[in-house]
Length: 169
Image (cartoon, rainbow, N blue to C red; front, side, top):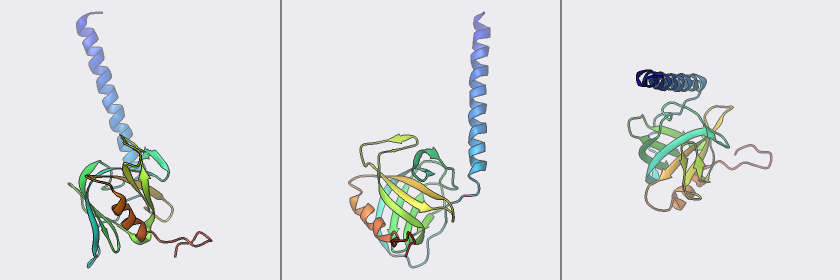
């Protein structure tokens, strides 16, 4: 095999891999098209805590390696997270503000691993929330600078308490 043929084969393989990646991503976008993040912040929401964050990903609940492509949370981004008296606002660079109302919050805790990111134990904040009536998802944030303990505590205060029957009150 000549050098030119070998180079041609390698270019063709690389192009094939890129096409497969593109088709797989488009299929994932179509699969998750029914889910979307709620947009806009309610008027008169009082900010209780505000942090610079790296938004890492949103995954299926308790499946940290199964990425979801909720619009506009499909891609990793830097931005700001604000805990308000009504929920969590995510102001990410290049995207409209996502607002997860307190009534949609399911849980908040720490995590160490999600798709594309592994950090020190407890280095990520995992926010579990209801994306629809039937789908709970986990969104992962990396708080810039300092311990996110107070940020997590403020968010946990907003999570509706479930009674003994499992219904939120």
